Image 1: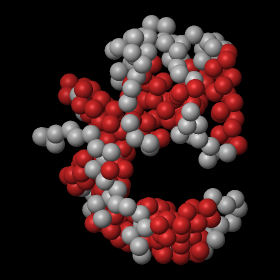
Image 2 (image 1 turned 135 degrees about the vertical axis):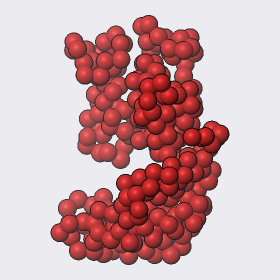
Image 3 (image 1 turned 30 degrees about the horizontal axis):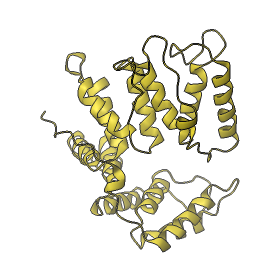
Image 4 (image 1 turned 60 degrees about the vertical axis):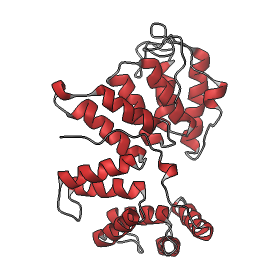
Length: 278
């Protein structure tokens, strides 16, 4: 199969602008979704629908997600595959990168549409070329892990992962970190991306950093660094803070706490004296 030429695009450069009033409705709906206990799903759906009337694609994505799963036992949101598909299709018509990614996923799994690997691949590549970091790591994983061993292409995979890892999607950054940890065996670059995810409030990122400098023998997350009580305490504190409030972000983490050099691989296995850059 001939693959499209790799283009590193960022999602933010292709997302349609959001109407200011619709954004207020969207944020109100999100706040209501985060309320503990019984949620006012009817009002949440109503707010999303108001935002969607003004082409708010984030509201389309969130409401489609509610229709995809439904909310068992609670009135206001029933599982409705048809409504989900309508919203995903509308996102595609607006050329939203996430819309193409969503359509690729439902085509891959046959959710509401005929299962089609060809359609899924087409939409996934379109999503990646429009900058979807989730699509980029999905393609990176395909090249690096899913092909037969003699056809795997880590060079092509790395291009997609590097592009995805430069965006502000914690999920995509974690996938990028895992690629460097598993496929490239590049421990300092892997930890660089885990730290980047941690700065965006990602629990997995913080857990890996905490484990990397664990002071106990045989840590779960062993990256080959020397035990460091100070760094272990730092990331344990962040770990506890995120447990208490998962909305926390640590924007100065990478600047204030640059990672030490790895004992054998330096700052980057391929460039030991150079700190990783996006």
